[in-house]
Structure formats: C-alpha cells, structure tokens
Image 1 (cartoon, rainbow, N blue to C red):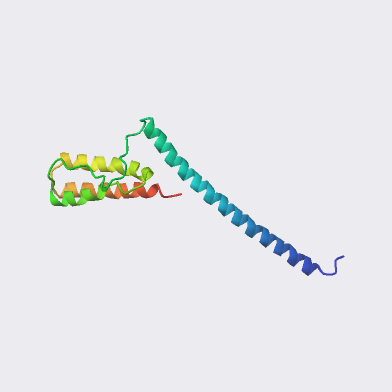
Image 2: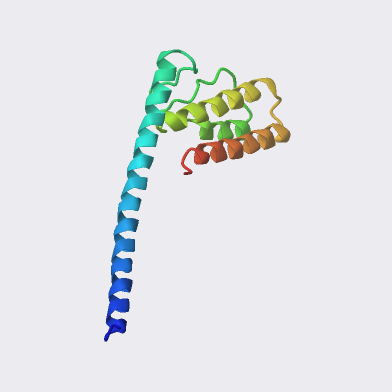
Length: 138
C-alpha cells in the first residue's frame, strides 16, 4: 500500500494537464496549417479552372473593376451600383462578387428607374454581401 497516494494523484493530474495543454497547442497548430493549406488550394483551384476556361474570367484587380455604365441611371440606382465593384477583392471573393455585379448592371439596364428597382438592387446587394462573407467562414 502506498504511503503517499495524494502525491501520486497530484502528479497524475499534473501530467494529464500538461499533456492536454501540449495536445491543444499542437492541435491548434495543425488546424491553422490545414486552414491555410485549404485556402491556398482553393485559390489554386480557381486559377486552374479559370485557365481551363471552366469558369468565367475574373478581371485582375484594377483601380476599380466596375463595369462601364452604358446608360444613364436614376441617381438612387447609380448610387447603389457603386457598391457592386469587386476590383479590390482577392480572386476567390471576386469570382463570387462578379456574378452579382453582372446581374445588378443587367437589372439596372432593363428595369425602369423607380423605387422598386432601388429596392431590388438593395436586396441584391444584401445577398452579395452575405455570399462574399460566406467565403470567409470556416
């Protein structure tokens, strides 16, 4: 029978705590590295799909990658269209944002300049923001 069981129990708890701490640190490093690798792989995949012309081309970021206006729009429509630019975004996010930008300009071209068009573009802007934010989520 052990004469000092409390000391052995404390030592076991201490060993378990240190082992748990080391495990968490190593696990965190592995998760971080895996996330970085997956992001890098996503970007490489997008570049490969673009090169193979399986997805529409994404313009390289310029000062402003907003499509050139082909018509004059109602001031409120014109105000909302500025938020559909995507030239400042990284490639992965620009691919998503470009689809919404194209749709916004198409709607601005075919719909009359009235309050309902402004509401439609505002809702589309909310959807675009959510879609771009979803590319950030884990």
